[in-house]
Amino acid sequence: MAAATSLACAAIEGEALAKKSGPRIYKYLKGGTPSFSDVPPAKIPYVIFTPSCYACNVNSNINWHTTPLHLQEYGEEITFAARQFDVDPALLRAMIHAESGFNPRARSQKGAMGLMQLMPGTARMLGVADASQPSDNIRGGAQYLAGLLTRFKGDVSLASAGYNAGPEAVQKYAGVPPYAETQVYVQRVKILHQRYKDAPRG
Image (cartoon, rainbow, N blue to C red):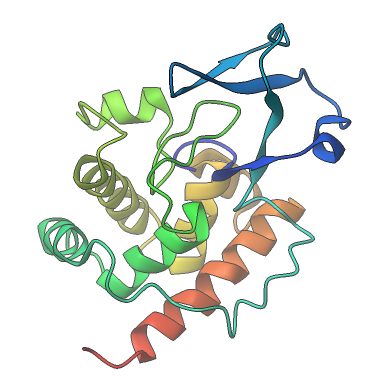
């Protein structure tokens, strides 16, 4: 997640997850539209809705060396943003994969949104009018990532760490911060970046 601890999240529903710490969120249909409340609705079927962290799951059982790649999704948007900000498109695609799993509706408990999990403040700083729009989200994320790459002299690991934990944390520790989430995230991006670079162009 840009400018803060990464919490790229896809929604996972289930009672088991709801028993973990944090308030319960109830999801139900109202007139055919999904609605959410912290109070269980009366006489309406509902499920427990709990965001599950995609990018920050230290104990993820996903094999990042073999998990399917997303080679076609948002091709024009990624290509345009990569050219605009002089960022490797394979790295941009790897970051999106690591952040949100290419889910444009991903939203963290802290409010990070979209494919590249932009925090509202970061989105405003980058001039992103609507972080829920994939093209705007990718452009903002690419711009932020380009700034990190410049700041850390092209070091992809440090830029990835900065995207996850914040650039100040990278500078504080003069390297990848000793946070389990960040270290796992940096390794994940590294694996995905290499795989997207090696993937055949179709």
